[in-house]
Amino acid sequence: MYNNHLIHYAIHLRQRGNVEQSRRYLFGLLTSPVTAGQSYLHIAWSYDKEGNEDRALAYYRLALAQRLDDEDRFEAEFGLACTTRCLGRLVEAEALFHRLMELYPPRREIIPFYALCLTALNRPYHAIQLLLNLIIENPPTDAITHYQSSLRTYYCEIY
Image (cartoon, rainbow, N blue to C red):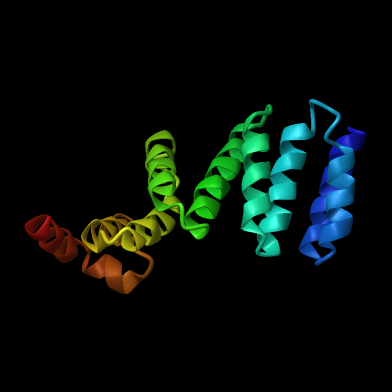
C-alpha cells in the first residue's frame, strides 16, 4: 500500500513538472514486483514528456515484461507504438499499431496515431480510410451526426 502512495506521488510530481524527482521515486520502486511494471511505465512517460524517446522506448519494453493491470498494459503498448513511430521506425510501429487495433478494438484513440504512421509510410489512402471510418462511427459533433448516414454511404462507395 505504501508503494502505491509513492507511485501516485511520483505521478503527481511528473504532472507538476518535477520529472527528475518523480523518476527518483519510481527508480526506488523497481525492486518490488508489485510496483515494478507501473514504475517502468511512468519512467517511460517521464522520458517521453522530455522528448527523450530513445530512453522512453527501453522503459516501455521493461514495463511490458512486468506484471501490469489491463489499463497499464494498454498504456505501455500504446506508448511503445507511438514512441516507435516518433523515432522513425515506421515498419515496426505499423506492426505495433496493427496489433493494438486487434487487441483493443474499442480503444479509438489508437486510430489517429496509426493514421499518422501510415501517412509517414506513404499510405495516405489507408490513413484517410481509418480516419473517415472513425468519424463516421464516432461523430464528434451533432452536425456530423446529422450527416452520418450520408457519410457512411459515400465512404462505402469509395472504399
